[in-house]
Image (tube, rainbow, N blue to C red; front, side):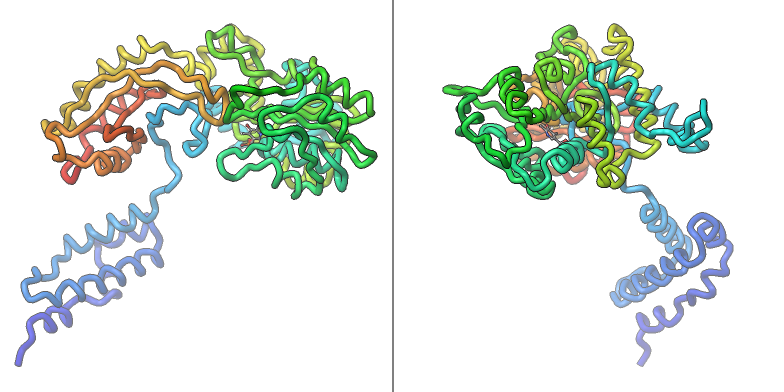
Length: 469
Ligand SMILES: *Cc1c(COP(=O)(O)O)cnc(C)c1O
């Protein structure tokens, strides 16, 4: 008895024969022989399974190679790539926080492809200090005596505590024992830094006396943490920095302030809510201030420490600094961004983070009106798209209660229950440059505050596949 399916399977070409065929040569060029071999083998396995079905169409070499080429291409594509952040959160931690200015990208390009004087003093020809490249700007911009740069602000907090309070106690208000982004918790960092946390006061109210009563010979520092991602409202009390500094200094203790976001300029001059600056914290008596490079500062991921010379010198000498230090690429980007701050009047145009935070609702509304027809056309008549008012957030914990009036596109099914908003959201994420929005009350909202590259956004809508939504 003849089994046609079995015969078709036996007739499949061998991997060796396929490797020799002309159609495979360009694939070997692009992806290498071993990856192509592996891909042919697994495609042949799939073919054998497919041919078991009685009504299976016969083996088609052209289609077979096209399938292999597509699989190889998608397997080799980068998984980390640009997206459109239309979530409404400007400094979105999961989407890489701040977008950097072109001057930083240009500087980084040179630093990546050429040798640089990272730790080399060009005047003396001797060994140099890697942080010196950013320290000069940080001193100027904050008033600190000395600056140190590490991998992120969690590392900065760790390094300050581990240097100044190892095996001793640090006083922190119970109202400031924060968790950020689910992975940074002040109490956990403290214990890993080898420091004993002493909680003072209560969640909503902490007084100067609470700190004073907690000071013992084991106390190494007083720390204040900027409660960046929440506010304690109602019957509350916190001790001003100036009072905490006086108390710390009366006991010969350093006063550490973790600012979190920390911007280098007064945001109020750009019509944004005020966020404390390192300069203010130092002027209030802080001895060491820590803050992030990629939150409101608008630069690369980094943790920055500024403050008193003697304490900062000890921090710089901590052996863990070596493990937490910044690389040449981030230092170069940070240098470029800090230099923009030397011209505060240009900052709101040249620093993308600030430019996006500064866009007015009217400006965004005009953009919404421009892109609406293209979005409506791509969605077809099963979806209704309207321009909607919405509220953007700054993100990354900065200014948690303040939101910025913005404009977005709202998408709902034209006929109730005839469309799946979740599937529509995933179709937007499958675009060549994925578009990330957010769903609220059964509506997909694309907040246009951060829409740069408008032409590219519109152009790629032709690939939007709303078939399943
Ligand atoms: C964000 C934040 C941190 C952590 O900073 P990373 O740069 O994300 O490591 C620490 N403390 C505060 C108060 C923060 O807001």
